[in-house]
Image (cartoon, rainbow, N blue to C red; front, side, top):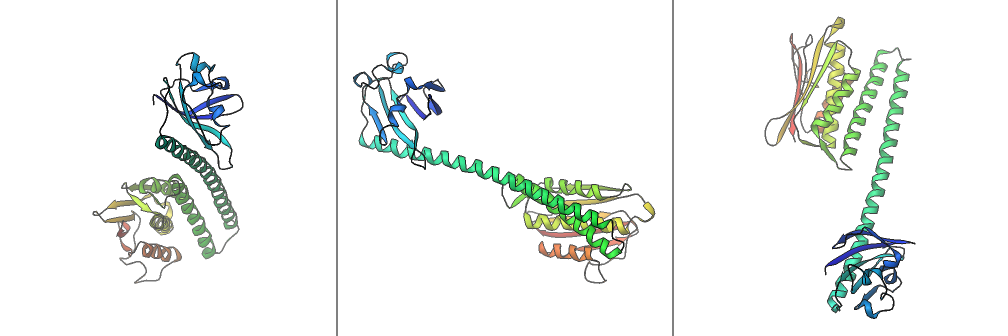
Length: 321
């Protein structure tokens, strides 16, 4: 057929969701054969418009493009209401075969399915946006409560716990933001995520400590991304606490790089005063932050290795990724 249209009809016009071989984007109802079609049970075929009283004076027939044939299958919404047609037009009279009629009816059902799918996707996107907004608000509220509570705490251990919670909330917020950008996917792009984590770390670092974040471009599942964020956050907290006494200036580097086709390596290092060589969690008592880093490394299916000397402290973990 020279013309095919997905036509939607309302009170005073018809407009075309899709069209081939037909220039107007919409027409008045007095030019609409589809307005007659939706009054039929499910299908209308006019073999010769000059011989049918419903179409003999239709402007599309008596003027350009002088349409002479029409066949349309109704587009029926889930509530049973016909909203338009999938139709084909020709400039000469003709008659469809039974197979062609059935094909047109089948395709009309597919059109409705696609329209409903688009509607559901838009609804889902709106719900996801609302969920994203509420989650962000909730995380911000919890972070604010924690921050206010920490101002009234004088016990050092309690203060460390509250600050750890605040950092963890920030890490979760970064992870959530990056995952929402992936439209519900359980994986994210490492560089973009670590850049957000880096922004969070720079916000909590004192003026005398610079934070540098570098990352290879690769995909991470959310569980591994969360573990990496925790290790980076807690390493920085430890460095701020121990590596730069008396407001000594320094830098903390967070680097994610590819070792080979199947392995990644996370390196966290500072250029502070250093500590004794050790393996975290194995040869000396550890604080809460270091226990959390060891737990995060276990989530990556690996262990942390830490080295320290007068040039600073470095921690690394290799994992499948």
